[in-house]
Image 1 (tube, rainbow, N blue to C red):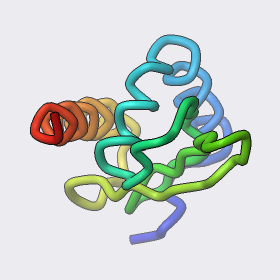
Image 2: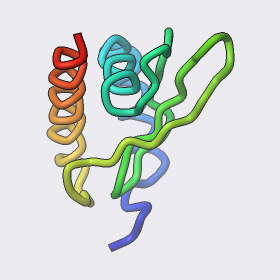
Image 3: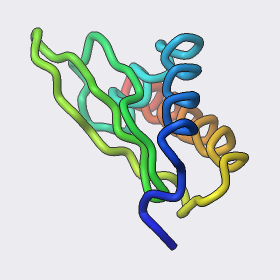
Image 4: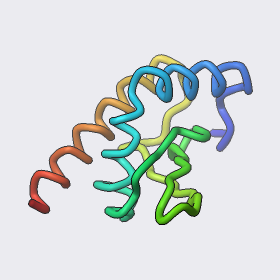
Length: 98
């Protein structure tokens, strides 16, 4: 399976949607799963078959972090389920850290 199963149009559509409609989820993900608890902003930057890559802001500096999916994916339909699962795992991790 290719590490780049999604063409640039799919990546652009997904990242635009997530960043426009779920920016708070991106921040939860980088804080809870990306090991960046001090992040103040985050956006989805890229996706591939193994992970999502986020750009997070920490103390004014942009830091990129890859967060793996629960499994390898290759179909566009799988992206939504994996992003939702990622956010649920992040929310649980953040709740446990409090």
